[in-house]
Image (cartoon, rainbow over all chains, first blue to last red; front, side):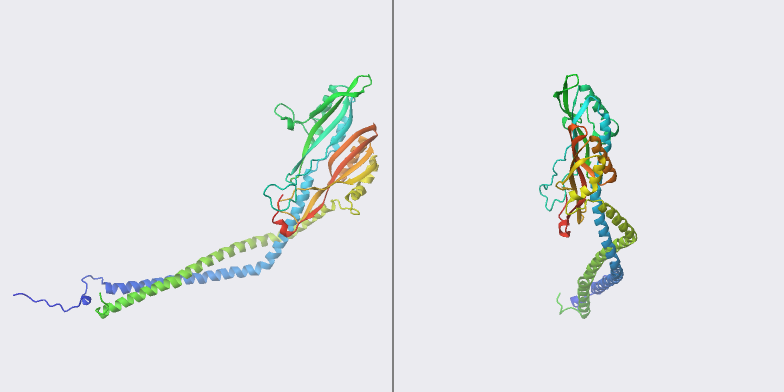
Length: 228
Length: 204
């Protein structure tokens, strides 16, 4: 005999044989997700409150100290202004070279057979005040921080030897504080010091009626450096 | 699956799930994300405030020694400024003459003539001050011996530590006692004044 199976359940009423049923688990998971998101927000909100309190306290302290800070800043500005002025004056002081001792020693170093006709520390070349290419603004100072100085001696002598004696004495003692001695094969012509610019027969005659020699020698002196 | 054919339990389950999911999404997008954004902004504000507070604290701590430093700098500048060449009757040459004439005579130099040469600029420091200084060359020509000129120069260098010899010319005359001497002595003087708006655009 054939058994008859009646199925009176609708499809949606049919229960799954699995112990985890979707219609139970789905709402639980969604509610848990909602709770999780709410908890997350709660955590973030607490952090916001804490941080707002911290920032508020910090900003209140800043506001409280502002007046004192402004005073300190203004004073600092004043100090920087004064320091900058001092610095510029000190550039001048750094460039100062004294010549008195050198010139005193010079008088003692000239051999009796040498007569100086002129002595010159020429004026420095004009300052370079043309702004470099692409420079915008006002040129308040020169583009170079140093100035070359030279020392030119001209005179008469009876021969070469007294001049060499004089030049040798310029390589020692107080002269080394002001004059630059740069000799030798490794020194190029431009930087050489001293330079004998001329050494020729003069129209004047010595006591023994012999023709005197006229000379002109140029020394490079220590440059004036306008820097601290 | 048709909603009308669903069992009431299943329908409830679906509505609860959908509602909770929508609410979770809404909470995330409308509350969590803005909260994160707020925290980010607050962190930034806190960082800025902390750094500013630190900067202020350091400045305030250093400020305690500022008065002494300011007094020291002001005094140093005052001393420097007292050694600058100030015009006399609007002439720097006149002022130089008032300082040096007596010394020149005492050294044995005569016929002194003073002339102010064009000013030369000084290099400017990194921080441009509002008051600049310049170099003021004064040309002095006189007659006398080499020894007199040197003794005059030695005295000037000793008594005027802010004076520099810029140029010198001695031409031998008829007698060693009467040579023509020209000295260019240089003083620092007050120069241009800069305005705050010019300061930003400037550098040597």
